[in-house]
Amino acid sequence: MSILHKKTKGETLLASLHAAPDEAQQAGGYADTLREILQQPATWQATFDWLRSAVVQQPLAGALDPLPTHIVLTGSGSSIYIGECLAPILQAGLRVPVQAIAAGTLLTHWRSVLPPGPGLLISVARSGDSPESASVVNALLAEAPAWRHLVITCNAHGKLATHYRNEPRVTALVLDERTNDRSLVMTSSFTNLLLGGTALLQHAHAAEDADAVRRAGADAQRIFDAQSDAIAALAQRDVTSAVYLGSGAAFGAAREGALKMLEMTGGKVITLAETFLGLRHGPMSFIHPQTLVVALLSSDPAVRRYECDLLRELSRKQLGMAQLVAGHDIPADVLGAGDVAIDLSASDTEMPTVLAGVVVTQLLAFFRCLHLGGKPDAPSEGVLTRVVEDFAIHGAAP
Image (cartoon, rainbow, N blue to C red; front, side, top):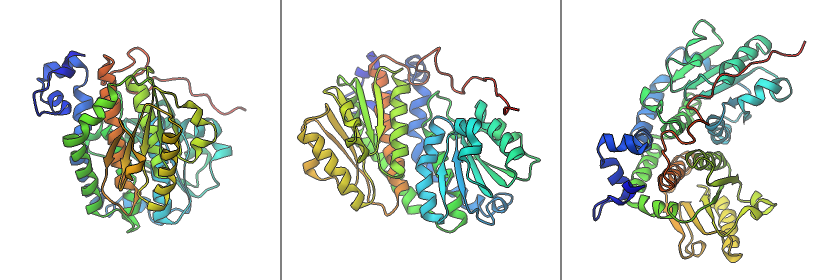
């Protein structure tokens, strides 16, 4: 795409794209996606500040008190990956069992996968209008009455936010309208919904502190300002496949990164998400000379040692085109010629590292899409829609 070559000397590609006239951004099909990626540091802080006041107000405080003995996070597509990021973070902070179950799985198999109540089901959704979303809540209100419901959404007008106003078992937490991404792909909605889930930690006084959110925002801004060109250069290589690696909460981020690349390139880049330790058990065969390895390192030094050992093994076996490694304290011997390191701030918890890591994967997919001549705002035109089209919801068998 010709716009990729219009930056001036000393200007990053990201800055040149952002500085282009609105008409050029619209014509290039990237205006919404770029704005929504770049707004994340500011919206993270706003979301965090708002949550601190929201959790002490009714009805949210009432919905979380007493704290449930079991929590299930649900959603579809990117939203279930938010749940996969949140589940280990909430479980560690709240000391209650927390798991993520896809909305589609609950729709078809809730009787065999939903733990016995009572519990709290957290429905995470950008629009709240996906066919599965309200159908799952409806089914469980009728069939599993011991479960309470918390909706976290970016859309004040969606079904999840509006249909249950008179249902005392359902509470809706609606984020700022700015987070309701207009692009087909979720970017700032993903990370802000992820932060929105920390409302439970705020309520239990086990939340991330404000400094952690500020550090994540500073890391993201530094990536935009100083490291985005290195990511763009990787995206412009002859990448035909990419493997995304993460552990713990970062595995959900790896799954999201793989989906972003798949969505934005219309399937032209084949992706796989796996844990670092799981890669050895077969999936390593996925890695070929044109495969990019994207590694989201843990904030925990003990976990990071396992992860770096795996990256050294890939280098020793000469697997993959290059490695894009994001994390704190990346050992020099992990990196080879052509690899890119994105250094993140030290953190005692996983959330800041996950937020910044997701930004890295968003930029990689964004640049790859543009390089292939695609339009990030509406990739796979005619195949994907911003909200999944309605489909028949079948009742339980008699």
